[in-house]
Length: 513
Image (cartoon, rainbow, N blue to C red; front, top):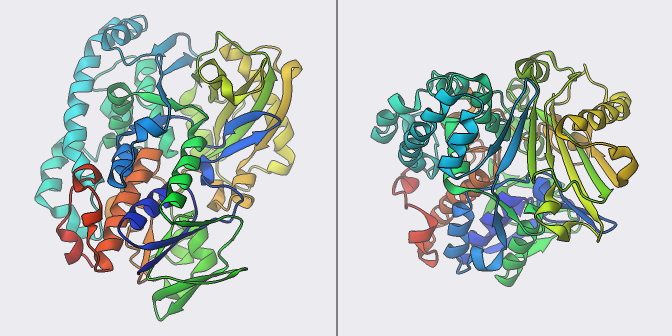
């Protein structure tokens, strides 16, 4: 039996473990922390449960396909609630938009801000429906070299994708009100990017929300990860927690296995789900990396980070929606302070999850949870979090009044804070960049670290640091692509998978070895 070792039990690592085990490979997952999920794990204390990272569960079709491929049913096994409204947007310059998947109601909501823009909403959906359908095959295949860009499929896509156009400029083709454009471009923050830098392709992110829904898994996104780990165990996968990989054993450039404090694990295939930059610099000697040396990684652009507040509170803010995004009046300045000046905003934009209005299981009776996320610069000398942690917390608690959260300090019964420094040091994320490498044109497709890692033999990548990129559905897609490569390279058959559900078979995988 072939052996695969997966480093990291995040969503990509767990999904890959399921698929590889179904293909008849003996899989061992090694996780340095005491729980599965990585950044999508659950933070639990005193009866409160929080998602540590992702809270939007989007486009469940990818995970549904993975479950079907291994003989399971996502919709029967995981309780998913489709939200309506999906979220509420509060604009610092005035106005509120309750985003709904109902097209007629959404047009009415947009018309309250700008009647002309309401007429463009169906056209935006129709155009992006075609864009997603045409680009989807590219998201489902590996990009292992520059030649993959010149396939007939990609060349036909260029006029529609308009890679020379930013997301902001793309949306200006539909909407004239800057608030409405923000409503369809703030999703670039899922990638840790500004809509002024983010390529126009990513207008499909907002489209996915309206076409396929925004879901809340009962118990949170971390509960989905826990269920995936349980399914993996039932399939014979070894999931070893609190076992950090100390090094990778190489024969030449080929990975032969890994070493942990508890022993050696031989591997015919090594799948890395850990943060890409941190894993490379910690586990792979620099001289073995040709394309992704320490120097090259240092010159890459990384995403923003996040300042997090997890608050267990007395009572519940019943009038506050499940998801609320506050977009400051000077949102452009917020972006500049994060990406260029690397300073903390005096009046930042932020996001609040009030999940207990949907899912009371997340808190003790009479209590509820508030999850607050503030996009901030990744680790930079301009911000000393040992000094800024307390003052910035106080600033954000005061800002919550802008979305109707008052007297919060009196109601806090449990609290936890995560800063970019914590993401960096405690969670082993390079620079605390929670969305990994940025997604500009110089760091996408074949210019991103490859799913079959180009610098080493027998090493594969899953997660936000490889193709197709960040965000839960895209990370699950990376697991599908990488698993197909592993199975092909090991000379195994993917007949164990239900190919109809897993996705298209790519005859070019063998040629790309």
